[in-house]
Image (cartoon, rainbow, N blue to C red; front, side, top):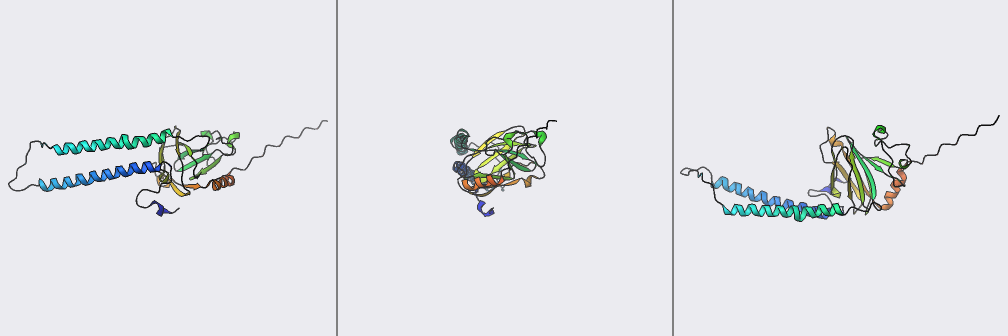
Amino acid sequence: MDEKIYGWWLPPDVSVHGAKIDQLMSVLHWFMLLLFVGWGVFFVYCLVRFRARAGHTALYAPVKAIATKYIEAFVLVVEIFLLFGLSTPVWLAYKNNVPDTAKALHVRLVAEQFAWNFQYPGKDGKFGKTDPSLISGDNPLGIDPEDPAGKDDLVTVNNLHMPVHRPIIVDISSKDVIHSFNIPVLRVKQDTIPGQLIPVWFEATQTGHFELGCAQLCGLGHYRMRGDVLIDSPEDFAKWEAENAPPPQEAPAAAAPEEKK
């Protein structure tokens, strides 16, 4: 992974919904810069204009300034516009355009201290049943080995593979504490809440090797909660699935019939 691609400003956008988010963030930051410079200049002006000097006495009567009221009203109008004119449409567009589950790649994610566990449904498209009592070092998700639907499931740790130009739906949960699933280049960030299953979706527009991180302080090993996001071409993704799929399990041999005496 090339660290230089992230640069000094926003990370590269490889998401279908990233442009609107970047527009909102740019407008918000330029507005905050304007406020910072404006109030900074006013603060310096007050320090100089109303400094203690010989022959000057403090005026205790409240200042009746009309200009400041207009400025405050302007700031309020801009903040309302940011909330309802830019932020809300972006949120509604994401919320109301959930991809068709029949066309999307469905993945389960279970976060833990300090790793990301991904479960792919395999060729049958069905997730195997899970049971917390079955969780172990070799079975971090507790997949039931007796469930036929889970025998072809693919499990990865800190490694999310996905095809380009195909919607991805990730059902997010946590084993222990609140983590935060964050892929900057895909403009997606969602807290993982223990006991809840929260779906998020995204779609990549270009291939590449990027980074997944935890955006929530989750313990002493928080710094280790980093993973790889590999956006592949459809052919490379199919090849990766085939190479990493669990080997087919042979059916138990039938018992030989007992000989008659």
